[in-house]
Image: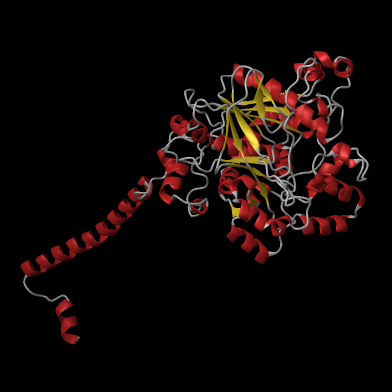
Length: 529
């Protein structure tokens, strides 16, 4: 060690030797200085370039944002092709930048993108439900929305936001609208007549059909290719397409098909404190149409859990119709045509995800919308399905604790062992894509951006706080009419007299398809819904 120290210690030899050593040390010092600087520059370059990772956010320009959804280059398409499996693959990508498919919340689609898809709904919901529902469907390729609003949805704070969104048309239930709908040919036909002049769900069913009739005309005038009627607690799940895109799914439908039926899956909540179903619910009960007969009836008792039917509510799905001449609604679940019997197909993988009774507050919200007496006889006038009747009676007669106990027993899936058994049998299934998309939209600030953009003249902080906390407060009265009884004006009374006195003048058609329960265990003949 002493020898080594001596060799490194400066010696007083000749001047040429000293100069050479000083030059060596200077070069070494320069190298040691340049090397870390070079590495730092190289690291910065890699970070700026994305390190070789194909980052959709840095790659997309606003002009190219129309490429998603429904095109092979979309990020979700890449995920679908690379995984070739379930929605679980999407969760593996949640460590990437939040919702990389989002570039501009206005979702400006290319005008030549086909097919053009329209969703119509009748709603009284607030922004906390409508915005996630709407933008999820924008992500999977829906072009435009026709919103027939009343109640909270028609209030100034909500409607102003909705009207600011490109591709959205808001239609209010005004006196002019009711007078126009009172002149509809539907009142002089038989296919919907058994639902006329009845309260609650029957009245809503007629209102939805009249709104759908108007939506067909609007969709045709706007150049839409397909129209779908959905409630704001339903999401299309376009499984089976080459990518997670409703546009791609309908693009692959043969040109001679007039109607596409989406069997519905029903939400199976695992907690009683769900606040945001679209981001908190991942378990669903499959439709009879997507199960084998042996599986369905073999596990019927376990899947029903003492409730009146396999599903809590309806089980006959929803349909998309090709926009064409003579198209008409056939109730809220189907479409028909005045000049022909539509050619229809039923999808084998895609579904409508129905988030029914997914929040405990759904019990009381249904009760508050209906003025029927909580008796077994009277609720038959108001509700078409048995579970709705039972839920209404409980919500009208029980205490808060009793309601919660009933909700846990009949709605919440708390038995993890049974859940696992039904998942293995295929009765229950996990679907993650909608929650990933909606959560990604929320984290990217899409909803807040829309609200801020539309509410510049209002107190932004107060409005956003109300929105983010899923406020259940009553909306201020709007200029549109409150929910009114269908058929109480002069035109509808005249139509009623025609129905009662001039049956020979009516146009007879098969009765509209109502919400129907799935096949029961004691059914002698199993017919498809």
